[in-house]
Length: 451
Image 1 (cartoon, rainbow, N blue to C red):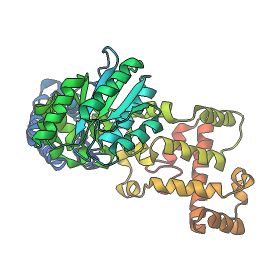
Image 2: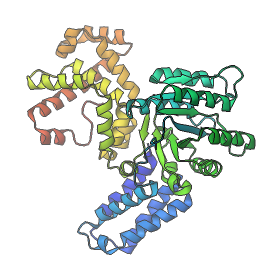
Image 3: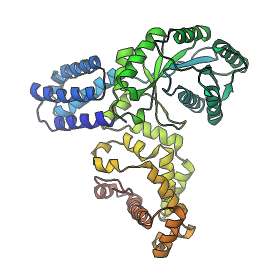
Image 4: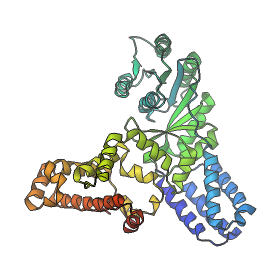
């Protein structure tokens, strides 16, 4: 996420960090690079200019100039200005209304509204403990209502369908009546995709808005459209009383300009980031955490929250107990760690949130492939329980049998065993509590991985 912007800004910040004294000249040079980085990331020009000027004013202030570490002080200024630009605080959904609280999703066709509706329903059920009713008033796209019904079943929430001949307002009225009757906390309404220049469709969504009186009207927008995402959000905001935005497909957006520009241009907060196709891929938007990630400082808080939700606590406790009793780290444990990593979104997602991950060589990062994890798990699954407990016995004929059983090559089995040996050494160091020695040994690369 935002790799291009992060790489450029990290280079600028690294140079500033090495400066013993901050002057107008080196600040001007640094900000010129920052400006180019922002524009390359598709940040709206007025936003980029305003951001640069605010950084310049504060960086030349007495507090920074008098600092013992002026380079670090400037980085702190850049961080603060990024946070302010994106909205300072995480804006939660305002569901403090007489039930059912109605949440309306609008946006362009193909922006990911239906998937976002399913993701949001899951988030509200699991994290907010809300009783959610999902409905779709998209009567134009073939199978749109059926798609949302399937998603509702997957995330474990109720769904209100369409009776024969029902129009948009009738579907919404029927869903609203059921939500009141059955005591639902939230009614989540997915609408048809529409262009802001389509007067008839915009009139329809305005009439729907007036009929259901939503407490939240969220505009769902594809972040990969960059500057166009900002322009369409602004146009919808002029037509509808939006309360917030959901940015989708941010994991595929190497630029990040939409996230930086949205709040400043529309005046509306980004409430959620959509990541990936899985139904747990919706994150509340925390401007401070995103600014930290953009500057390469990681996002440990989000990582901890994800671990608490997705990591199998019983499995982690079993591994901890195993170490406590002095038993070794084996291939079953290695497989379990890879499964846990998959549950947390894979290695790329993990690295995106780790402080200092930007220091890992680009070539090494490029070799990261979460699909490879599935192959490694398949190789371990092809081993016998005895082989998984005692991997030293895995030699010639056993390797060939394991490779054939997992649909891989012997070379891949060898690579897995090498990675496991690295991870095993790491676990031994952790078991002894010698973290300093462990870190120095693995400096500049990731243990247990092929780089």
